[in-house]
Image 1: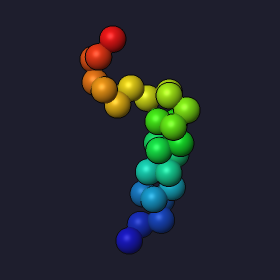
Image 2: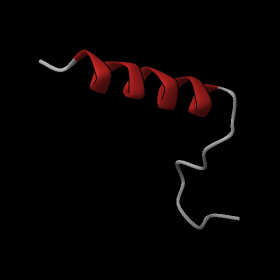
Image 3: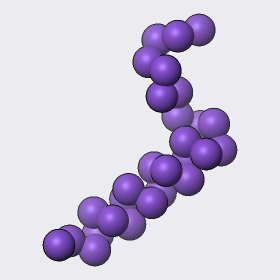
Image 4: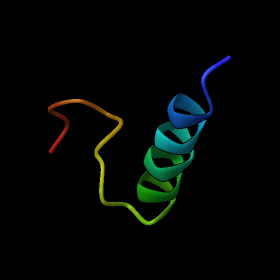
Length: 28
């Protein structure tokens, strides 16, 4: 397994938790 990948996933999950990434797609 690649630890770098896990770090990126964790960063993305953190961003989603903070509402920085729209996981709903183009739902505005």
